[in-house]
Image 1: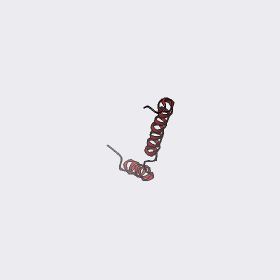
Image 2: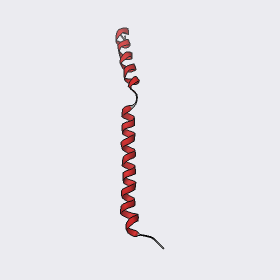
Image 3: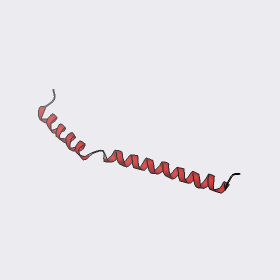
Image 4: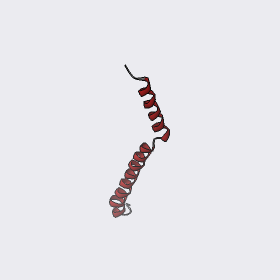
Length: 55
């Protein structure tokens, strides 16, 4: 059986963690977005700019 005191303590710890918010998820999303934008600019600079204007 589960000890009620242990369950209450665990619930309290979970509530504290949830109250801090999803900062790790925002960090991962920010890094992923930065990588995608960097790849886009690198592709643009390496592929499109050297070709010049296509007539």
